[in-house]
Image (cartoon, rainbow, N blue to C red; front, side):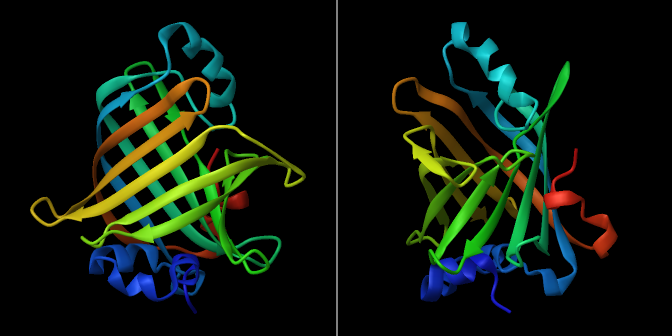
Length: 214
C-alpha cells in the first residue's frame, strides 16, 4: 500500500530524504504511530489586539492566541482508514504554554476523485482545504494549502497554510516551519522548531474518532 503522500507526490516521493520517506510513508497497514517531541523556537503572529478572537478557534483546536519562545511541543500521527474508506493520517499537535495547553489538529487523506491531498482542520473537520505538495532540492517537503471549504459545500478565500519540513542530520531530528497567513490580516500564526520522532506500535482501539485526541 502506498501512503497518502506517495500518492500525492508520485515519483517525487523518492526524492525526499530517507528519514522523510520513512515518516511520510506511514500507512494503516503498518500499525505504527509517529510520536514527535521537541520545542518550537518561537510562536508568533497576529496583532495583539486581535489575538483574543483566536480563542474561539482554540475550542476546536483550529488556532490559538498564545505566543512564546522555546515552547514544548508534541506531535502524534496515526494512520488509519476513515469512515469514507480513505487512508488517512491524523495530526495531533500540542503546544505547552506556562498556563495552557493548546492544540492545532488536522486529518489528512488522499481524495482519489480530486487526485489531491485533503486537509480536514480541527477536531470537527468542518473546514477543509486541498494541499499542493513538492520536494526541495535538499529532499525537504513543501506543502501549500488552497482555498478553504466549509463542510465540503462552498469555498472562501480564508487563511492559507504553508509547511516546510526537512531532516537535520546533525541533530538527528526534523526541522518544521509552519506559516498560516490571511489575505487581509497577514500572518495569523507562525512557528518553527526541532522535533525528535520515534515509531511506536499501536492497536486499532488506540485510535480515537477521526484520529484526533480530545
